[in-house]
Image (cartoon, rainbow, N blue to C red; front, side, top):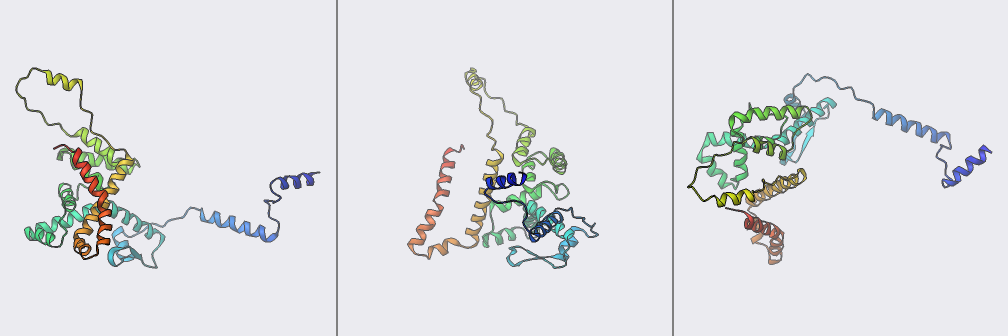
Length: 284
């Protein structure tokens, strides 16, 4: 009876048994299970006697055009993890790298450097934004646990508060509670002292009553998702602007036929519309 029940149960499932039917199948399953257990076994990592800089210098080769890196064949697993940390830190702080280069060159060559930048098509507000942040926040104040964007937001604080907030936010990040860009922006707004209004001429008080009755709403704070979209769009637009300036794109497209020119006009149309709409609703 037990055998019949087993047959019926198997038939209900489509007549296919889930149990291995041959010694070869059993061996294959056992080997697969062993491989899975081996893959999930914790890796014992050796302690490195090299610094991150030493590992990068001895193991990493930057590919032509900076399109990636090549790691030497004798790189260990411990070293590869350190190199991964190096690349992540570099991506988080690349704004400071650019800013430090600009500030050094500007200090050494002065106006001559600004002219050279203009001649090569590299003089952009974005670059000088990096330089401004790097100058405002010297290397001894920067926190590795925070990104360049975090520093850029905190930079808006007065000098006496900036260092304190940088240290506070770095501690939070090291504990695994790193603030988002929008959270830091909100914190900075709260800590920024409000400018005292100059006393004006005495009035009847009607306008003041109207303002109290209809108070201005607080500045809109984008959500994390919205801020992420804005950051991605800004980065893409900055890169597009750089490519247009550095590649003399207008000259290249200008030599093309009308069909290609129209294609580029259609490509740029959403950006023109966006500019017009934002300009229309911006108060001056």
